[in-house]
Length: 141
Image (tube, rainbow, N blue to C red; front, side):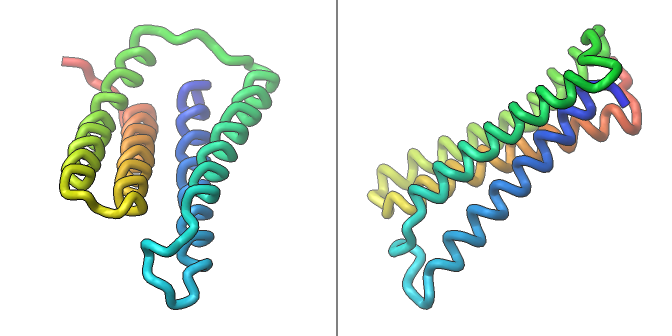
């Protein structure tokens, strides 16, 4: 398995675990209160920060394993580029939705969570695409 595919697995697992922890923490703290009353800021920041630290630590550990990081060839660069393109639409969708929500003066809870959800979905879709391209083949046109 190439280093870049291992990296994609690390990103996917970190994204899923950190967002899952965030959702369980925020939803678990409600106790019957409306969603807008949830204390979401600190769990969101801890979720993002924890995912970043975990990804960095796991990439360092991965680089120290035998085989090292390996060099990216043209195929790896093409797979990376295509996988990033698949996630960019979700980032644009999240930004557009957040802009519309801000203009409509929605509660900041919803705006922040839509942005966070779309960033996470973009990362997840991008890494799943990258893993699929490594697993099932990449055929440039």
